[in-house]
Image (cartoon, rainbow, N blue to C red; front, side):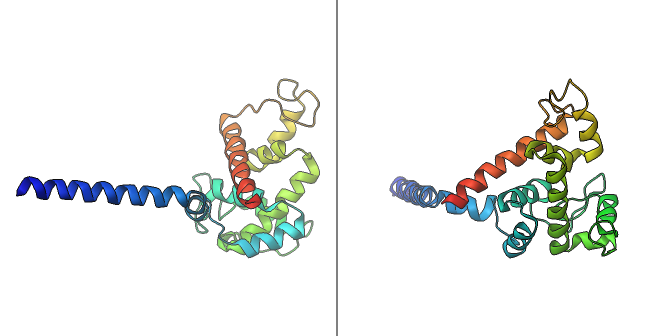
Length: 190
């Protein structure tokens, strides 16, 4: 009798696993969409995407790579909030030359402030550099470093785009963000 019971448990387990697997396969993109690529803060992202003319999938992707949608995080180097902005960059952007709000850096933990300023900064970098890969490199490494790289023939043949990114961390960052952008674009088309 024990052998029949064990066989029944194994059989029921196999059926349960098959059903769960089938459900997961059938929901594949929906589960991925819901858990791996969240759309948190969507209305805020839509708002600043439209205001600063930055594609939503780029904003979502940067947030995913930078903070995994966790608003209260600080990186080991001191970048803060959803879009992981450095305090010095934020202070510069809040000054009179840019948005003129003079907010305290702790404001970066507010999702709307982080998204607004991160998106504004992306617009600034896009206007300065033009090429999205160069913009992403500047967002990660800083515009000063990228400007130097663009002047160096080892990294840029035209002074406008980078054909080589000399920092492996920045090169990896650009690849990760581009990968997420591709996935978000696929999901948006759906």
